[in-house]
Amino acid sequence: AVKNHSDGIRCFECCIKCLGGIPYASLIATILLYAGVALFCGCGHEALSGTVNILQTYFEMARTAGDTLDVFTMIDIFKYVIYGIAAAFFVYGILLMVEGFFTTGAIKDLYGDFKITTCGRCVSAWFIMLTYLFMLAWLGVTAFTSLPVYMYFNVWTICRNTTLVEGANLCLDLRQFGIVTIGEEKKICTVSENFLRMCESTELNMTFHLFIVALAGAGAAVIAMVHYLMVLSANWAYVKDACRMQKYEDIKSKEEQELHDIHSTRSKERLNAYT
Image (tube, rainbow, N blue to C red; front, side, top):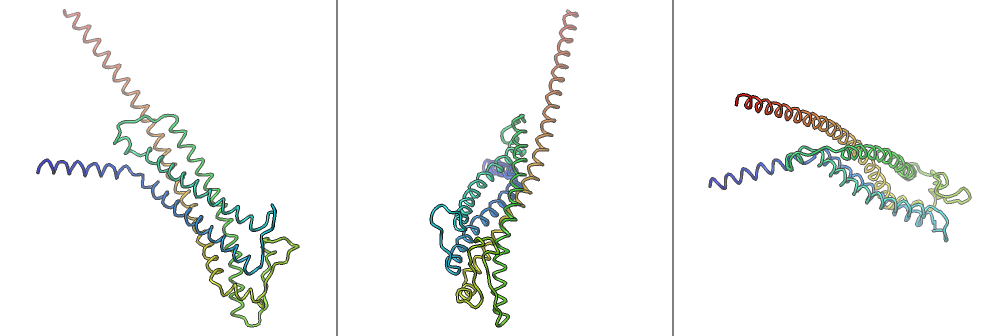
């Protein structure tokens, strides 16, 4: 019974030590980053697909044959960019978590004393610079994502005004959003059947809300990048202090060894003189 109790205590202490080694700040930032990227990529992809269906169904637009850069080609490019963002930030989140683990005191407690190398300091500085650049990039993505939200809000407002004001003749022209060229006339008015069908469909409402959620996901990714910057800056300060402490311990150990050698030498000289 005493042995089982002792084993239980050791197991409990090991669990506490492992839990203390988790970089909770990096973990929270990683969860926030993954949630934001998942919302942005998933909802953004589906919103782009819904936009294609709306343009083809209600505005009667068709894909241009050949290598012409039209709105459908741009949407396909944005989809591939979303795939790349999802893969890149999945890997980057793992790298930042690993960096967080290696700059906590738990690694020192579990695996003994460690040496802070110049390479480790350079890696921490590199992550700070890279995260700052990614934060600026996500700010740009957030601003860019707000554009389709604004466009769909205008469409939603026109649909709402049509139902509130009787006899209102409002038109929606894609040229004012830059979706088509000036020479193409792709517009629908409130008196047309396509406009009424579009306003009554759930596809418009769903696409609008998907873009809103994608915008929220991009904002969450920005917050995650700011959180990461704070964590990395704190880790950098920790590494810097640990480096100074390491140099101090090395100098102290060297001085103590020299004092010990001097004391031993004098003791031997006294003993020889006495003999």
